Length: 376
Image 1: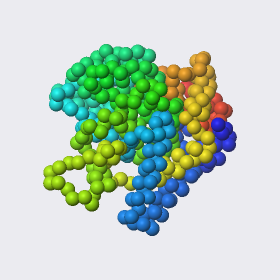
Image 2: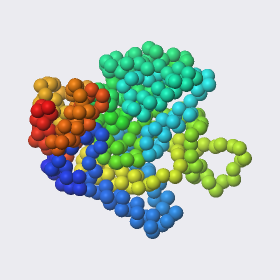
Image 3: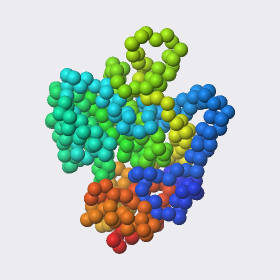
């Protein structure tokens, strides 16, 4: 893979060579070419006005192809939206919540899912079972153990957002869900871009996957996806928008009938700002041009996080973790604020101070940031 020294000049607007940006697990710098996508979106709108949507949909398909690459599933059916919240709502609205009222999740999910599950549980119309996320090594087995014929869906992360632990054996969980007639939704936000996530190898062909490119893929806001499994063709989500009928708008409608297309548009929303897809499409092309492949980036993040961990006395290759290092400190939020005052950008989640490298950061930058942390 191209070195950090060679890569950094492509991120001149974000001044990555001069700054200690260790928020790579949350918001990575955008390559300079991302601006080309933003400008092209403006120019297409100015030139074509309402006829811009054909071009915008081409950019959306490029974004889908980008996600397909990381899932190693060229034919994946993918719905897009500005954020994962809207996609999760559509997923839930497609489920048979009348005959099956049990949702199973963990206490290690990102705030969007955590908050939604907690609120649904308050209503008492649904039985929300929350399983401890740790130890991550046994999480899939413990989720499978509480999944029964009352369960409509299991919702879990592939990589835990607080401490970067990979959740193994999700394929076995998928098999248990399939056997009991439950759907499995896997949040892969902290996996894509930091590690390959081949669906077939993991036995997740029947699973739903939700995630986005705001973090490791450098796509910026507004680029999230829901990967649909084959059984999605039999479901009718309630919360869809007029884009679900985009290809059939000229057809005469049957009064009162709600029809659904096949594929990813089955779970589509409505009018959105296509600038995000223009930007993302250009960044995905940049990744291809620079050789930033799933395998190369995984190796790079393993090397960088192992280097960071070694500066804190933690030895061994971090094969069981994703793309960032989490340190338990007494007041992680205050520690992150103090580091920002010294020019080291990090963030915190609960008791964890999170350090996220990126492929454009040199080893000496990582070491300088670690030195600042050790001075706390």
